[in-house]
Image (tube, rainbow, N blue to C red; front, top):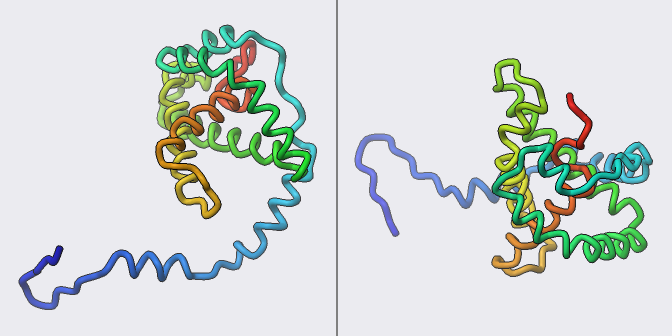
Length: 184
């Protein structure tokens, strides 16, 4: 589709060309990131912070409504996701730590943005008021990350289901939303 723009001194910009030029731009920090990732993945800073709890207790504690049914359905996949993660961990030590940190970081960024705009409300009150939105936002961000990955071998239709599955797994592993009895 061709567009014509009338006027003096108008310039047409091809967004695709600009995007390609930007993606080919080098970055000094990008050269250090693989070593930083190795450092983070090899550290044991992310101890097992999962306190035993019932899933229903965490759902109630965070005031989940829309995602409750999805989380209830997810329970069937949890052990299989654990097996897959363990297999990848065996082949690539630090894999589970990377996944854990990824979801904790996504959660904290989404949550902290909401808290910053909450006019003095406590973290737990903000989380309870926005828990379904938080999970939805994390799923959206994960899908964006997956779609921009150069090593994804899923069909578009599978991305949503897989994103929901791994976010639900992160929820049950206490990487997303607040833990019961952890009132901040």
